[in-house]
Length: 426
Image 1: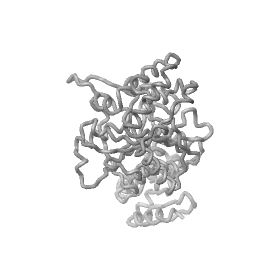
Image 2: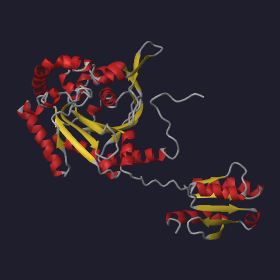
Image 3: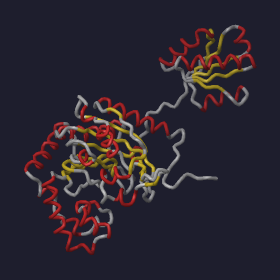
Image 4: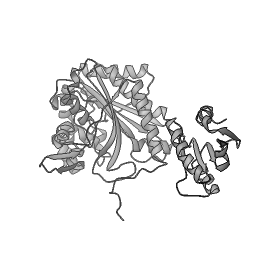
């Protein structure tokens, strides 16, 4: 027997319906917020992620699935969605479209080689949005509100929004120098990764999972103390928009994002649900005003977020939220006799063309066994066709909810069932 690769999973019927429900909610909300779908390749040139995600990140250094193709090109399975969307934005010159900003969303599998654990897979599905072409703090608040609305509309209550600013270029440079000065005396006490980060990107030391309890972390200089007047004003406006939208938040000066292209607004949404697990982050995002230029496009501001569908479903389970999924079948046709069996094939096709869900037996089961199959499929109506019914050009219909059984003319079956299904079978 061949098993699936470690860090991957099969999503089986009974589970996939939950995925379809939340994905439909994503699309519905994006339509309300006027975001349009974009689909990019599952693999890209490795250079895209080296430049777009950042050479100093754990993703690029440790977690990417990279391979040589037959043309000796270096390709990588996408570890995240933003770099691909921005590459497409530049390559397809979306910056020249009349409608700006370009407001885009994506849903698809991402790949990272890391130790599999609860809620963390080597292949996972990510939903994300990107708004490219606006430096207005109001759109930062819009992006955050869209992320929060997804969780709220799916019923989650134990949510915590954490925000921070990473400042503009000058703010970051001043903060960077202060971090180096602060952590340098403790360099040998930090993990090997942080010793490298201190030289390459000291901001990411604050994001270290291994050293998070080190005393130097608690006394590290805050970016808020190094903001320029412009960066401070920008963050103040973002908070004002969140306040006016009645979105609660907590400012955490140590919140940083793990990717190199972020600046100004950064945020994470966490679950406070009991039993959710040690890794509480559900979604994260922020502003990345230099990424489009880094990938060869014109100066274009951008902001976005991404969430893991797997972790969203975990959060729903932790809060005991049942999604309103209707997995009942509209109708099931039972045939008795060869002539009826032939007529049933025609009838099933006719009902399906009319948009009615229907199934039938394909294993030669007896009458009672077919009824049991209809019950397992939660069929709302069972249609019974035998030799006598054929002779009278009628069919018996049993309402499985009320137990009522009626005889209907075969030419009237589509209109009758359509009306009954519309009324909910009552």
